[in-house]
Image 1 (tube, one colour):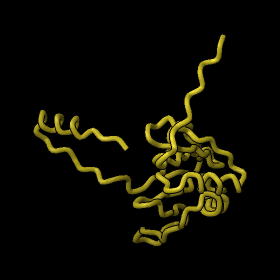
Image 2 (cartoon, helix red, strand yellow):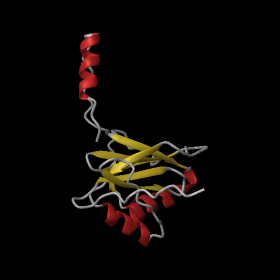
Image 3 (tube, one colour):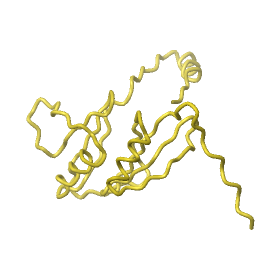
Image 4 (cartoon, one colour):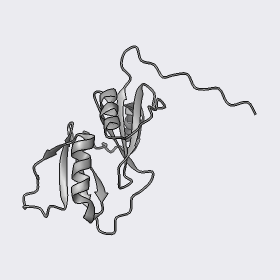
Length: 155
């Protein structure tokens, strides 16, 4: 979804230094208040539909951090003392069937609005009960186009 190959090559050639090759995002982490552990697990598993993973930590772990499968990446949730959400930062998660996810969310009372502002994609935003902002994004399917923008209101 965005490439800067020519800019990267030019920068590398100018500096003589080879840039690192980024392979993707391994995981993202969102926080929740410590007294919300059970509610957070229900939300991310039952409402969103994430599949839990076993702890990859070599130590047994404290139970204050847990993991979910998210394609080739992972989605982590951590109990954070004195938790305060950030309004703008968010994670964008690629999803195969955006309409099916929207229907799932609607069954749980979560309304979403399709956004077509990212060229070639459609997406929805969800704010979890702890004010973490999640974006779910997918390529526009063949034959689906963004609706025309509404003309500005006459003043």
